[in-house]
Structure formats: structure tokens, C-alpha cells
Length: 303
Image (cartoon, rainbow, N blue to C red; front, side):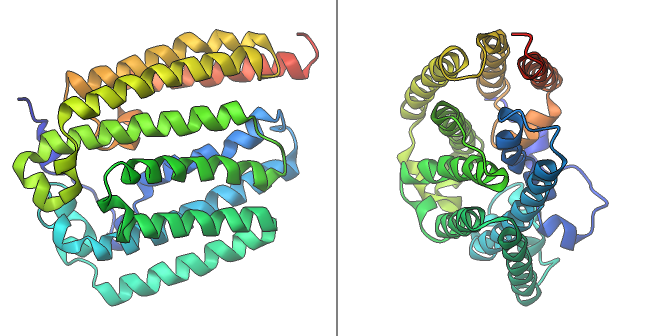
């Protein structure tokens, strides 16, 4: 079995512990909030762009607040993990009381920003926070529910992004978001089980309920479902059938991610993998480029 050396210890960083406490790398997950703006063809509306940016910042602060709560509850388990033991609270670089204060401050600030947008966005922000905290305290210890909780976190992000700019969002897009997040969550669980081996049961007891054969079967089901759902979305519910041109990039991206999970035994931190693997970065860039081109053609009335 191959274990990546980078898994054992995170790369050196010059960021102070208080910044690391916020987990800024995780903020990339909140880019999903811009989906409502992009897929409503509203990227030229300055007011809506401002609303989306405000929503993104609010969710970054909100998620950081929730991550701190998670680190406080998981401090003992994190000290058993080869990478998580370097987190500021687990490593003793940040004490619990200041961490609690910072978490509450970020929560209050994010909710104030959410209130400035509209009520639906505020309710979605509160729902996301309650789900995330519930996950940290209880849901992550319940088999299957833990994976669904992660997926619904992304689902709420997508809804919140639409609420922020007050536009409707395709049900097919929400389904694709849910399935893709399930795919990433399952890949994460699989790699955790492999990398932590027997110690994984001490770090996270729910891992003993995820035999590799079972997880592999779920990944196969979700992979096929994601590709089918996205394909149906592009030629049945998108504004133009030219959006079908993005299907090959989605298929390649999923296959590339699976290659990294099964061949390279990566995937425990999907957000880092999506930002570090060059083929994935190029694929995402091309998908965005073609999507914007198709939307520009549609917006210009050329298709």
C-alpha cells in the first residue's frame, strides 16, 4: 500500500496559528455560492455581483466559525491523526477560550452580513451553521448520515447563492450538486479508512462501518448518477443545448479524480486536490471558459 508522504505532515506554512484556525483553504468550497449568479446570466449586473461577493464572504466567516467548533470537539481525536494533530487547537498553539470567542465573533459578523442581503439567505446561513455544528457534535458519528450531512452542506450553499441574488436555480443543478458532493464525501471516507488503517477506528469510530468494498460500490453508483444527471441537465434544463459541450470535461474531471483516489491514494482533502492537481485545474478552467462562452452566446442572442 502506498501512503503519500505529504499525508504524514502538512507542508510548512508561515501563516500564524490564528489564521490557520480559520482554515482559509476550505473557503474554496464556498465558491459554489456564485453558481446562482453565473447560471442566471447575471454576471454583468454590478449589484448582483456585489450581493454574491457579500454572500461568499459571509459563508467563509460562517464556515470558519463552525470549523473552530469542530476543532474544539475533536481535539483529542485530532491528536491521534497524522495531519490533524498540527491544527492550532490540537497542537496547543491556540487555547480553547480565545478560540470560542473568535468563533462567536465570526458567527455574529456573518449573520449580520447575511441579514443585509435578505431573509431567505439569512435562514439558509443559519441552516448551514446548525447542520455543520450538528455534524461536528453528532451526525459525523452516524454511518451514512455523516456522508449525507456533508452533501447537504453543499446543497445549502447552492441554494444560498441563489437566494443571495434572488434568482431561481435549476432543480437539476441542485441534484448535480448533491451527487457531486456525495462523490467527494465518499472518496474522503475511503481515503481516511486506508490512510489511518486500524488507528482510524480510534480517530473516528464511524470508519469501522465503511468497509472498502461497500464504499467502492457507493462510489460507483454515485459516479454514474452524477454523470447522467449532469448530462440530462445540459440538454433538458439549461438555457441552451450548447451547454452539452461541457459534458466531456465533467466526465474527464470525475475520472481523473477517481484515478487519484485509487491509484495515488489521495482524496482525503478533496478541496486541496482540486487546487493542486494540474490536470484537474486545467479541466476546471476549460469547463468554466466554455460555460462562460456558451452563456455569452446565449445572452447575446446568438443561439
